[in-house]
Length: 251
Image (cartoon, rainbow, N blue to C red; front, side):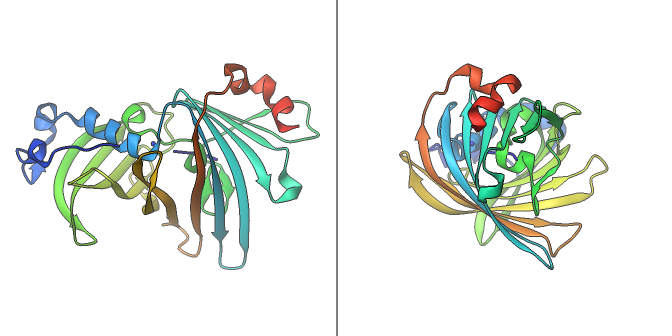
């Protein structure tokens, strides 16, 4: 159950970047700034809320779910189940690398892994959080073309061992740093899933992706589409982001 992060960045800034930037040259490029700008495209503020509809499918099943997501200080996310009705009242909390779920009728929230499946091809982390600039460092940059667009391919390595995906390949447009595609890998660098960022619309003054298409590399029949809407800049009380508070929010 996991979640979501504009800019005008002059092309002249990148004219000095060679076709491939090697590891020892990374310091010459402000890679942290690049990732921060990518995050700013995906997330309109440090504190905001949105709705995400998840359409997932396997070889035998199709499911529709809907969640309300509240983000606090970029690093904390609260996911409230809205659909289907039978799951309403459940709540998911992500605080940094830690995650809990509350299910009505249970005594207390249960600690879970961000890598656990939320529904179909969607993991908890997919809905609740991927903050590239906080979770990853850039190891390599390469100029490529994707979907006939000039792009940068960034190879990212997790800063900590508890990040759900330890290695990521991210493609962004050269012109405005729009994320286009990301491949997520395991610790052994086995491809786990691919996400395509689509449906760019003007939201809160910037062009942002409103559709994420997820495909499972291990089981190709497992797919999902996440559709985002109802973005609002909104502060929420800090106490919402405590496991002990989840039962009151769910009700």
